Image (cartoon, rainbow over all chains, first blue to last red; front, side, top):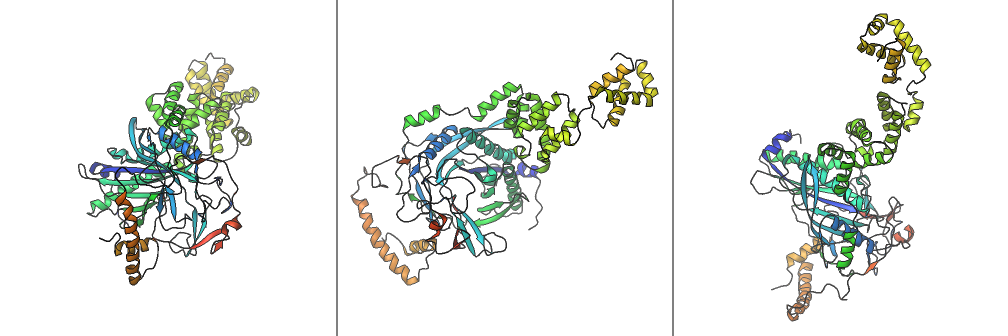
Length: 499
Length: 101
């Protein structure tokens, strides 16, 4: 189908978006949710399984205390109420990613409810209401074979690895987010980024989207101003922060084009494609799913001791928002400057670079300048650009020591991003050191003076500004490897003129 | 009034991927109805002050420590599987139903 999509500005002028996010976080516990199998990533297939997570007859689950503690801490950090009493439930469905034919989850009694998370978007604070945070078990991985594509369509068989089945999974669901208008895609991204930072600060998960320990489903609908909410679609497979933003935007455009043409939105699951940035329909939800939830009889209810909850609350670490405010003060940044650091995803990177000995101003310059530009060009997150805070600090150290000028430092940084090695290695390999050997430099200066007698006379007669032409000439013969300030002083000295 | 309708039995059969004939639907609907009616008698004697029971033992907060215990070997894990390939359980493809979570 090739329809021309309307312009984004027009869409948000005519429609109001409502979004909602469901985020799944794999906890970083040592063992699975209901058995003692290890949770480490990347083992050989079916080597982290036991009778409990394989659902063998007679086996019984027992809840992992560390996972219960982790979800309560997440709930508290998200300003939720912690249930005094709640149960696990069985979610029944027919698909082989769980060997039991059901997933242990929570249904009408989630352990954390009614919270919020404040996020900064475009200098404004947007409060995202949290509906619920519940605990469930992750599913196994299915590999579809027999078809040409490896996708389920056309496959005749599925091969299943249950290593991941039973790993504790926290599901965080927002209430519908309204009134964000054109900012809806940015709000969605900012929420997931903030949530990731909160969870990382708590130390309960490594929250790596690319490894699947943080996964996001995005609900989107459009309605006319003042009208009821539109039919929503659920976009799955949104696996990077940038994709969260792109998925919302692309779904808003698609829905607007359907509505503009007088069509109606089908309530369905859609899949996001990283390469094209658009969504395609998955399974239609016209036949409502029927999971036949009922209380899990094999697990006793959870009734967290209020004293324990209070203890966990008191021991929460400094949360990212508070932490950022402290950094902003330390770095002496305006709200706007801090916002651009935040938008670039550079807070932790700059913090680590400063910790490695660089001034805040220099650290910010590199991360928001060259490195952000490169990240945008290649469409990756700044943290995945290939340069580390330690390397940036090393680079700035070379600049501070007078070994690299600004232009050369940029070239070296390009090399770091391209994986050529450490700044010092690249400087050496590419022969990019500031010429500080005064003998060589003096010879080059004398040569330039001899070649440009007219300019030399001008400078001698007091027109010091003309020195720029000679600096340029020397830079040319030394291939830019001289420090401009040193050079200027040297030229004036050779001409016997006071700077 | 029947505790479970013939349509509900057909729905459950579809969800469970059971091929149930028209005649079997009649049989099972009748049998399940008898069972559910019998169970429903519990509700008649339970007064309003008796909460529904989901667990037979009055316990809460049974947790285990987060300590790794030995796993099965892949050979043991797959020993009861009808079919296996590449150290994975091999099953017929399943379409149309959503995956969990």
